[in-house]
Image (cartoon, rainbow, N blue to C red; front, side):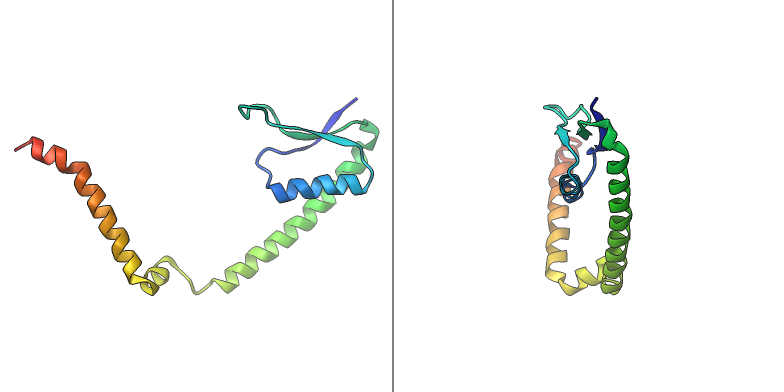
Length: 121
């Protein structure tokens, strides 16, 4: 009897592809169900044979632990590399862009409230 082994909702595509490849490399027979036209169904990877469930879960758990360590290390490295950057330093590096953004916001604000100001006169 088919059994769901991995839910795909809110899973990055690279992780889902890694799980597919992992199951294929270990000869675990599986299939995938999409979210449907309106996205209300549960997208999942299913096993055709529930006898392979324990093996598949062990493989997926090992993969996710390794992925967690790798992604955490990448995040820490990116934090160290970008530790000197902030929003203010980015804007100070390109002051013309900052001026254009502020000017654009002022123009939008002006045209948004102009009908209400002229209505009172």
